[in-house]
Image (cartoon, rainbow, N blue to C red):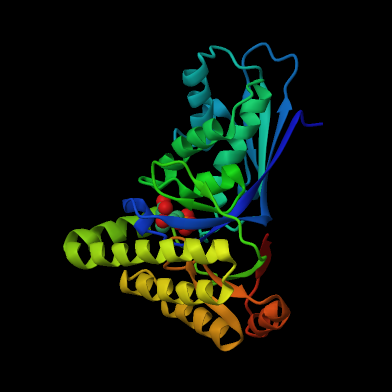
Length: 313
Ligand code: PMV
C-alpha cells in the first residue's frame, strides 16, 4: 500500500503561448480528464537511505544514485534537502504513471513536476501551501524547458483557469457558463524547449516584427480575459482563431495543425487554435455543448485518435 497518492491534472493554454515567455499575459485551463498519479511507498527497515524511482510508462526502475543528473526525482530530492536542511530522508520508492501524452502541449511535464513535489512534501510531513508547491515545481520545470514562463506549473498546481503574467501572482478566472473544449491530437510530437528556442531565434532576427506580434497577442489575451469572465463564447471563439493566425505568423503552426483548426471551424466549433508550444501537439476547439459529440465523430471518422473532451465550469 502506498503511503501517499497524489493525482495532478493536465493543462491547455487557451490564449497567449510564447508571448507569455516574454512577459505578456496568457490564459490557461486545467484538464482534469488527463491525470498523472504519483505514489510513494515507504521502504521500511533499510539501513542506508534508499530512494527508488519507478516510471513504468518509460520502463524505468532505478535507485536514485544510478539515475542521470537531469532526472526529475534527483532534482526534487536535492531541492527538498537544500530548502529544508534535510540530511537524511526516510527510504522510499516513488512511482509515476501518467495518462497525459508526452510532447503534445498538454502539460505532461508540469503535471509530473507538481505531482512529485506534492507527494514528496506530504511524505516528508511538510504542509506546504500551493504557492510553495508551485515555486518548487517551477524549479523542476526549468531543468527541462530552459526558459519556461511558469504558466504550466501554475495552472497544474492550482487546478483553476487562470490569467498569468510571468513573475506575478495568477488571477483566477471563472466563466458564468461552462466552456466545452475538445483537444485534438495531431500525433506530431513537439519539444517545447526546441520551439521556444526557435521563437527566440526568430525574434533575434526580426525583433520589430516579433515584438509587434507579441504585443498583439497580449492585447488579445486581455480581451479574452473579459470574454471568459462574461461567458461570451462567440467572442472567445473569434479570439481563438485570431490567436491561431498570430501563432502562424510566429512560424509555429504546421499545415497539419491548420487543417485540424479548419476542420473544427467547418464543423461547428466556435473557435479553434493550436495550443502550447506548437509545431505539433494539440489543437484546442471551443464547442457548443450540442455540437461536442458530432465534432468528435468528424475527427474520429478521419482516423484521429485520442480526442479529449473536457468542460471548464
Ligand atoms: O509545454 P507547452 O507545449 O504547453 O508550451 C508551453 C507554453 C509556452 O508558452 C510555449 C512556453 C512557456 O514556458 O510558457
